[in-house]
Length: 584
Ligand SMILES: [Zn+2]
Image 1 (cartoon, helix red, strand yellow):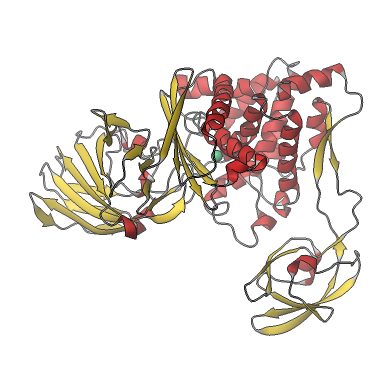
Image 2: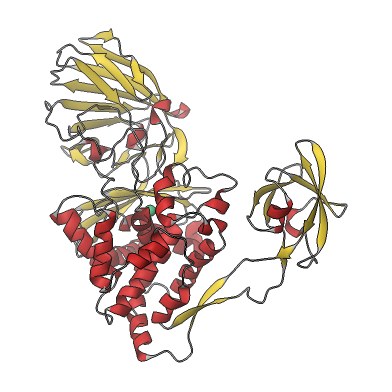
């Protein structure tokens, strides 16, 4: 919470111009003019993080050549902490600030500029006056060279695409800006204007994309009963290898591998990402945990509810695609089984609860290390599984009258629309209980705040499905490491899984495996071919320049590979739940 954000302050007039005289070197130049000031001191701040991506990124690190002037004369603007500059304004009305931003990090949540385009992730571009987050501003873009287009959800001023208006800084920081010569096409969904802006080329089929996006958007709007935007912008960056997405109030940024559209699997992944980020315009951008707005741009904003904000979005991305009937139901069952397998093969499932995973996103999820799989889980994965469990519980317990959609809509209407605030943990739990028709204290104790193994067959059983482990009869031996091979053909250990032979017998991350039973190794893929559980092997590693030989007793692989299959002779009740769950 920014407690100062709502305090009445004199409303100033703030305008920025952004130009790119050194686009080839990844720079933007910003000039900020503030008029209407009445204070003695003006603090200017740069956000340290970008909402939607729970990591302190220290955007001020990219700022240089900061200067402030009053009446054309440079005045002192010392930094008072890592992201704040202080100017003694002494009652003058107008100040001009100039600075340069280095933007050379390709991701959906960081800015990138070169001669082909500028992607401005606004939290890392625009400084703001402290305690004046409510102030409107005008942004004028001076394009580089032949750049002809601007794509953003910020409104145009006087129909000029290069001049945009932001009603306050929360909106500005929620509105990324793409400038360049991107390929733009659009479509309407029940009165809402959608614009797709493609940077970087790619083998996409515009007509197919428009049709499939349209179907997904309609399915998602139906869940909440309305589409609150008038217009929405998809900014899509196509790279050799791209990935990730970030949600905003009226837009999203997606990273895609540009050859993705050519394969069915790749295209389905693209639609899944579209469905995910677009679903966020309700779930987290409007229906949100109480601490996620108004944002504190100076610090971490802690919540235990990312399993709802992200996990349910992950769940619904697949449900929304399922409901379009673009793919058969089996396709959906495969996707949800993938989630099970990711969770079940992580030793971290026995260490970190989904509420802890959410709270510690800032220091763990977004800062993984070689031991992360042993100690952490993803609130995306487990949250999606919990979404499925609660959906099935509600459908089953309400005699197919309700499903998770009803909870989402109720919470959206009650907290976003009516109370105009975020929800607490207890309030969301009440929402579930209302539609499940039962108390969920035990469920929360076991699955949200506890480490109980998921009872897949109980929940899937409601719909006449069960899991089978395709590796159940497997008696393969496992070492329990992952490796990477360097250019010099060195086989390096990159992770060691807790509880495996390698973990118990002391193979370390960073070891170079040089020999097994005295035979030199140059390929990490077949280290124990032909070995059985219980076999003893000698693993020779180069550790910090010294050769060490470790006796290792191989264990049976404990990996699982679940598949969701129908039970034999499902009851009428099970078939009714199945029909409701999968919209058959
Ligand atoms: Zn998400």
